[in-house]
Length: 211
Image (cartoon, rainbow, N blue to C red; front, side, top):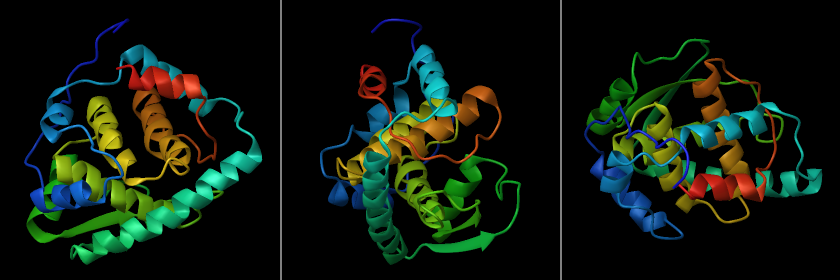
């Protein structure tokens, strides 16, 4: 591994075992073990900068490829959202620019103990529309709460590594844009980036996977 080493996830709390068992059942391939994701930094800082530069730059993927991947992501997200609801999760939607929770620990504790969460609705995504909110719920339940990880850079990337196993190869590039690109750009810059639809270059995904 080259470059500055990644630090371990900083925000770690109890796992929601029931959600993790659902991930294990649904995964298209075996995800990394939760103990690895909870204790290992897997995204190097310089690669996070590259992800941010890509996400905040000009989209480069062919439009037809982008639409195809986002259609797959929308369809698969709807299915996963219904599975999350089948776990008994109740979602309260609010219209607010501020986060409903003071910390990731508070969100995950509510899911783990009560099976409920509050989500501030986002603006409509250019290709996902309102399905972006469903994707955020899936990400919070089957990623953050299942693993017991927070919103720092390494926790977010570990959550992605788990959640990506839930999507087909066709949907994964679009999911990367939403769950790695947007999130990493926000953490690195401290400013919420605008919504966009793009697919990551293969070399960028390879750099992320190189750890």
